[in-house]
Length: 145
Image (tube, rainbow, N blue to C red; front, side):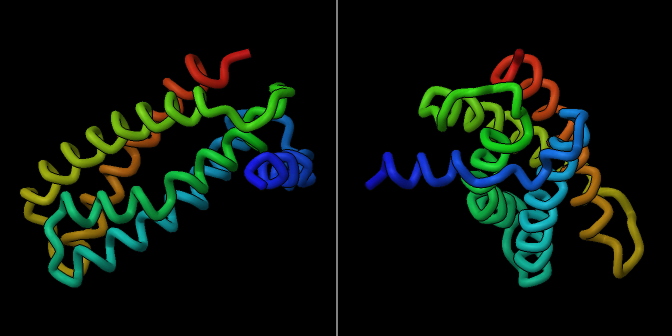
């Protein structure tokens, strides 16, 4: 059953097939998954959750979906199937990106930012740091040509 799910996912037509640049595909996928993760974290922060717990829950909500989209659509020069090795590698990169996100969020929450942006601006800075860290490692190490 797992093999048939993997085969079915791999055979899905690439919705980003017309986008020629891999950075653009990466940005589109990361933006969609990042928006999901950002909204979950923002809701949790406003609900009074601790920053670390809010980031953990939001990262888990988008991590596996992000890996699948990256594997299948962001780097189409690859001709293989879903890979447990690349899943582990991208998870390690995700943990590093998460660490960068947490450090930046923790520092930025200490800034005097007026309401109603006191959570949104620090969170946006944290996601930007995480994006840059993750793109560089994923494109240069995991999904390299």
